[in-house]
Amino acid sequence: MSRSLILHLGLIAVLFALNFVLPPYAHGNIARVMTLAVYAIGYNIAFGYTGLLSLGHAMFFAAGMYGAGLLLRFTDMGALPAYAAGLAAGGALALAVGLLALRTAGVSFMIVTLMFSQAVYLAILYFGEWTRGDEGFVIASADRMIAGVDLAAPQARYLVAWGLFSVALMFLLWLVRRPSGRVFVAIRENEDRARLLGYDTFRLKLLSLVISGVISAASGAAYAILFGYAGASFAGVQYSIFPMLWVLLGGAGTVIGPFLGTLFMFYLIDLSSGLTDAYMLIAGVALIGLTLFAPQGIAGEIRRRFWKDLP
Amino acid sequence: MSTILSTRGLSRSFAGLRAVHEVDFDLPQGEIRALIGPNGAGKTTFVSMLIGRLPPSSGQISFDGRDVTRLSAPERVRLGMAYTFQITSVFSRLSAHENVALAARRRLGTDAAAVEAEVAGALERTGLSGRGGEVAEDLSYGHQRLLEIAMGLAQRPRLMILDEPTQGLAESEIESFKALIRDLARETTILLIEHNMAVVMALAQRITVLNFGEVLAEGTPEEIHANPEVQAAYLGTGGADV
Image (cartoon, each protein chain N blue to C red):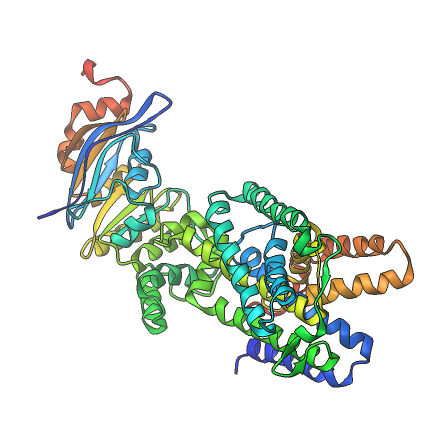
């Protein structure tokens, strides 16, 4: 077994073991971090591996959250089919947005994705009759059952978040070693060269964005079902910035980085808000420090110093 | 011998400036052809249209009997054209091995063993064996040029367009480069855009001279060498005076 496989399976094993030892508050936090880390993993595929700097990923997270949440609110279809519908909504939105936005690159791509995401956000507010806008809606605990298991219960919630995170992490590890994953990196490094090696880079970028959108939606739908709430703030600009920060802090273009960044940022805010109301100040200083001393993020720095082949 | 590449009336203007004008060009299969001309003659514009990086203003390009004028660059590469950049363009943060593997994988897909064999072969032929693990940007300039050619080799192209491949190489490196191109010519057609006349004269079977975007002359190295119009174009005195 390779070192990297040991590392990633080891992380999964540690997180599983923590289920049995963590005190209740931390237990809930880690469940949340694992769910959001899936979002960061999705973002990392587009940004970290393919070089697509999107400022609008909240629309994919929200597509999953509302795709699943609205169905649970208005139908009796059950959590699992609603979850699948959330994923499909994220994939379809990523395909539609990608077909248009990928005609641009660089700064234009950032602006176009930001605009699309704002359109989704405003649509959620506009259809407030169903979505209840900013206020959002609670998903009844009766709707948060899969095969008789109550996902609102801490144990079940933790284990489902853990399962989802494990699948996303191992999928990413598998993807980046595949030929298509390696071409994503080639596009990030030098798209013109990749084209002249015969790769249809538009289609590959679209593929990357759709995979990224589906995984982001998987996180959003899981968030709705596990934590029982869907609200428009999850579609706002800050939820497009968060995964970028998580990925940059953890290490863009690394498999383990998104989790490390999400965990770091979550606890940075959690701990500093216990000290002062100006917790964003502490968070900001920590971010500046990391940018200065580890510009490639935590896992990027580990790769640079100790582990050249860290995937 | 059949013609692998031809153009008819190929033109490209930039804001009224005729960079390439009505070029008819035929390249027989298996030949080493050099494309030369003074600076600004339109060589790079011409080959950029051949590979599909630049759309022509008018005219037609066929490759292997097929009209490729409207095909994208990746589509042309998949038909068997390969292009190495004038300014070194490798994946600078990836290893030399991965650079060549990316070139091989497009053709060989998920067959890892075949990709490995292809990469080993291409590195071997370009003298880069043993450097596969090095990050491309850490290689010397000459080795990066060779890496470009190794990436071309791994694609097993039927036409290889080399845009000023010896630019910036040392004399000793140029000698081994010439040997490599002769070796390569046994399996593919080569179009060589080159400034170094010694390299052109030593390698090319035929030479096409571009001047002011038009074909000034075409012939064997001896014919071109003796052609007064070509000499005039290079000396800048204008053909009419000679």
